[in-house]
Image (cartoon, one colour):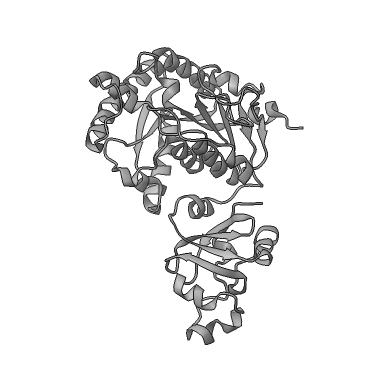
Length: 376
């Protein structure tokens, strides 16, 4: 039996993501009561010695209210202008709320380029967070909607929060949203739907329970929350989804069976392997036979050309690819050969590579040192 109280009482660092619906009042704009309660709860956690990062949605909703928009504008430039106005309003609300507890706040606006692909920016960002913690500053994070273009947006603060959780090596990701947790079916359509209290592993069946994106102001939904939970639990951390207006953060962390708690997988993975699995863009996929899947998942083996059955996409040596077996995606890693080269050597023994290509970089298509198993 899972002892939620002991699991959560041991959390020393956490990332708290608050959704737009939670932060928005019925009239639109920022719900100051929610912000005040959030500040009270987070301040008490900080004074206990816990390290907290707040990932906050709500900038666009706040800007819409201030500028008199009834709905989101479709033009990306107008949406970015709304976000620029809303971000200042949101930070003003947090600054005022946390000032009462003597905690300064620092705004950290991120784009996908800060988190994804660029290793130097990623490491610099991690150092920035460490400096904020050492100075006693609460980092308040949001995707920088005022500058990013639609095609490079992460698309939702749930995924952003998962990246931040791995970046700062937090123990727990808390997603405060407009639903009680992950249900056995859609509670909007099925009155008999029940909250799943614990998820031991994010399986395809669990992913299938996630529905469509959320309401008109938010951009997420249960689908992105489950995706975020999978990202952090694969890294050996926990995730918790709970209703942000029905339950305060202290209650969520009290050990009561509130929301859905996703349990960590294994002992976690190194920072470098987290980078490979979740920060690099996947350039293609390698499909493998049952024997190769079993060797990768159960024995920690490298992927040899003999186990590859098909190739999808176009990639080059050093790109990140997904490894897909009969049960679905099982691993991700840096490939030692291009897509064309893998097509020429797949299904063959490593000893044949040089004869087939005229050269050989490695015996392995993906070496285990550059591979992350994401399905156990």
